[in-house]
Length: 82
Image 1 (cartoon, rainbow, N blue to C red):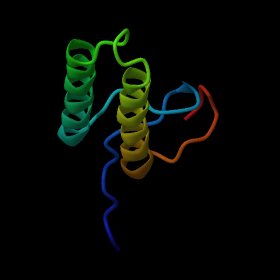
Image 2 (cartoon, helix red, strand yellow):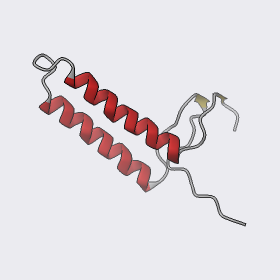
Image 3 (cartoon, rainbow, N blue to C red):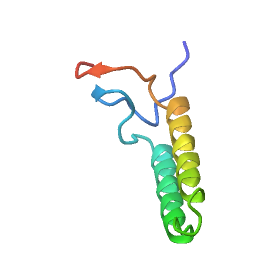
Image 4 (cartoon, rainbow, N blue to C red):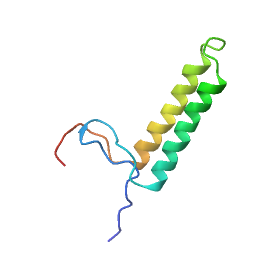
């Protein structure tokens, strides 16, 4: 029998999606996402480049959701019962 790999991102108790990471790999992913957000805010001026900021935000967020989808619990609506 194969042991299952632990999820990096567990499902939220209520609603749809994932909660805070439970594995160190998940925390690294969150740290890289936050560093990317800070870099985006610091280096991209939304007034000068009105399309670059939302595009960068969309790319970072899509990458985070993709990683959560691949390494987290399968998403579904949850009503608080495990």
